[in-house]
Amino acid sequence: MEKLIITAAICGAEVTKEHNPAVPYTVEEMVREAKSAYDAGAAVIHVHVREDDGTPTQDRERFRVVLDAIKEACPGVILIPSTGGATGMTPEERLQPTELMPEMATLDCGTCNFGDDIFVNDMPTMRAFGQRMIENHIKPEYECFEIGHLDTVLDMARRGQVPGAPMQFNFVLGVQGCTPATVGNLDYLVKQIPAGSTWTVTGIGRGAWPMVAAGIVMGGNVRVGFEDNIYLERGRKAASNGELVEKVVALAKLLGREIATPDEARVLLSLK
Image 1 (cartoon, one colour):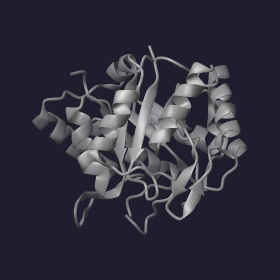
Image 2: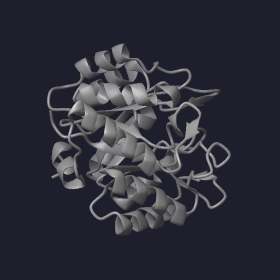
Image 3: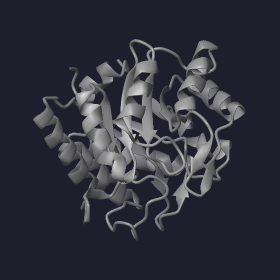
């Protein structure tokens, strides 16, 4: 099997210090958590940003400061800024990080229930995001929360509305109201992607560790981090994103997968 690419989603937009005191808000805290994950073996950092009080923001300059600080602390790391932002944000707000010309960014592949909220990604929004990434030469990580999201984005790629092959997918399973985090659902999704594509699985909450194990043995890549799950095991909160990555590395070793460095991950993701 190819080496395992580990992504760390270090803070997200919803989880707070009330859930886990180690959740980062400030620039310094973001760097601390990114470096803990990078040092433990993460080749990719998925980045949301917050104001110092924890309020989610898509402000371009806040992203610039955070991304530059992480790059300095974590040489060579792959950064994937979020264009998902937080529920209720406008498409214009959400697109701001793409103005910084990152090598990758997320592109959410459809509207879905998101707990008690609705995460809106209608077709005009997705076409606008796809066009921006084509124009700015940004490789999307296609975020699929529902099985139908995959069909939607594959059709858009065929029409030239979003960047095409080779494609990178992130199957986000277990969000309340979306596709459950089961091996059967993951297996179905993986079997639908085009040849030459790469994929990552993200399990939310209690689905995190079963999806990590499945991703490792199925030959894919995995994402962990406070955005998705704050627990190392039942009743034991992680002290850092690095602890979550360390557990992935340990599981990968037991299951016979080597860990990709950022440079190796760039090759696997067709970034160079």
